[in-house]
Length: 151
Image (cartoon, rainbow, N blue to C red; front, side):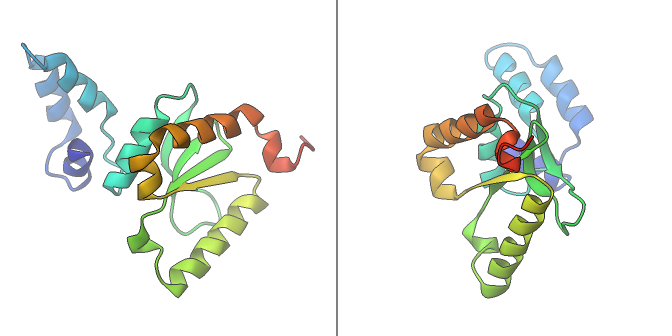
């Protein structure tokens, strides 16, 4: 999360960070290199960072901050090209306007054949196994779930 935030706000650049991690020796150097490899400057929040790390456990194509035609803002994650996973923090989803925008976003995704899963901070923080299990279960259904089996 710290590396994501530092990269996101421009405090550090990926190139020098990666070079420093590769040059590191001794206790913790391997963990540092792994952390830098997993860092993502596109993460907008700690919630997204933690959810992304959970999702990396899955054997799937994972893309972050994906722009989808018809949506004003990018979605947090797209897995295997059809499953959208959103990290929903209360701060940005707590008023009437946000509620309406969320409904429109959900409908626009469905109209394009995407399946959407949304997780809260409490889900990600206190039930990461459940989050992982649910995402894996939906992925196992394949993209036909989006078309109602009409694929």
